[in-house]
Amino acid sequence: MTQRFTYDINPGRILFGTGTLDAVAGQIEQLGAKRALILSTPFQRADAEKLARRIGPLAAGVFSEARMHTPVSVTLDAIAAFDALGADCLVALGGGSTIGLGKAIALRNDAPQIVVATTYAGSEVTPVVGQTENGVKTTVRDPKVLPEVVIYDPALTLELPVAMSVTSGLNAIAHAMEGMYARDRNPVSSLMAVEGVRALRDALPVIVKEPGDLAARSDALYGSWLCGSVLGTVGMALHHKLCHTLGGSFDLPHADTHAIMLPHSAAYNAQAAAAELQPLADLFGGSIGGGLYDFAQSLGAPRALRDLGVDEAQLDRAADLAVKNPYWNPRPVERDALRELLQRAWQGTRPE
Image (cartoon, rainbow, N blue to C red; front, side, top):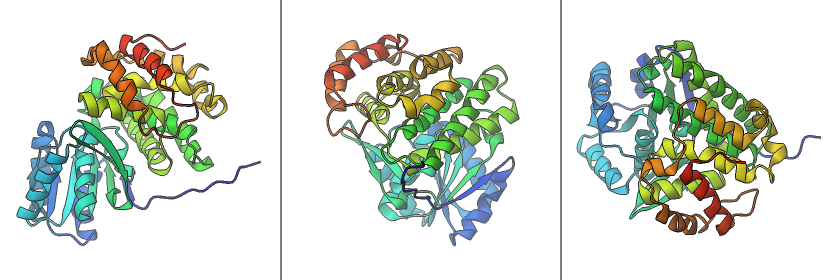
């Protein structure tokens, strides 16, 4: 018998397919806007400037200082630029850092957002923004940070470096995994989670071998959209709490941290949520923790926190922070058990 559930469908428009970048100008006008501030990281500034030229007078300017973990100081600088340039909407071109900046701006001024996604982050379809201030990362869930339009053009991901493709894809899988055992899970989000993970499981090995395979790039982007949509409709648990703690406190690369922690978080919750995780375990040889670890290893993904520069002495602080204001989790969040989990993740050992 199907259990009672609630399913909130997030509003927003999705444009998917090769060539959809051409739709940016029309979408700005459809929002009733006239001057878009284009956001990017320093690395993608040239692409942002190219997009600005492409949309001509609809571009108010470019702000290319987006950073990991969305520092509040950067957000305030971006808002100052938004106001000085007379912008009335945002176009975020890039991955999680740029998307997060757009959301943080919208949280404060409710500017309409268009996202042109170039990684597999998934946050472009969630009403959630994480922000860092004084070394502490906190998350806010608010309908006004959900982008109004998301453009997925697989051609834009062809130049995404393989290493970043892998870690970004594993980050997306983490969203789906936690959605499977979320307290507010529902049949629709679970179906999306399994399909999203399947698409990424099949696409990522092809991308590692043939980075220019447009079909695989398209499938990975499709999978990341589904996994991100799961993140946007149900609550997250221990894995995201750990990654927010590690990333915000030690300034670690967002996607790399997710990739490393994913097998260990899955293994931690495997017994408490065995039935819920079984459909995903079946995709990875029957063992969710070990299977995800083996999959990540086969892709050449980072597997140890120490390889990101984390000192072993920092693990005690990480465990202490992770048990403060814990997210709901199917297995009790216990400090000693988390410390053991972090030790395995630091060493890069395969979960049992």
